Length: 111
Image (cartoon, rainbow, N blue to C red; front, side, top):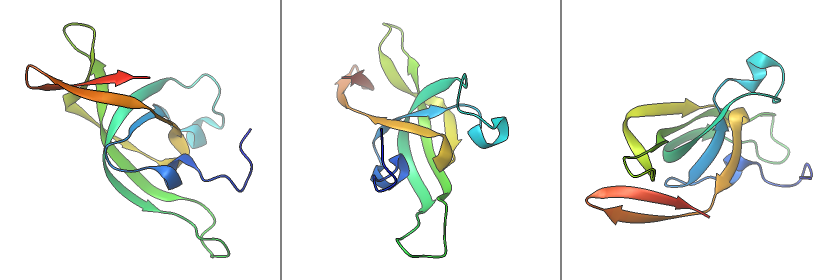
């Protein structure tokens, strides 16, 4: 279990990462249980992260990315049309992956 000293997913995130996120706001739902999850490739970060001892108590902003969807051969590819805006509280995890170029398309292989 993560301690309060462990960096959050948002604090460890970089452009190009593959993230798992909740597709409905956990704040609006009041819970994280049973909320559907999806995968996305991070394209841009617009986050305000609290520094130790600062007045900012919560992470604010958004992570922007493209949904990972199943391609014609059941491989994972970044959608050309489905983009997402993810608040930091709905980030679940950063996934390890390798990326290959197959017939001009970036294919993601999760580990």
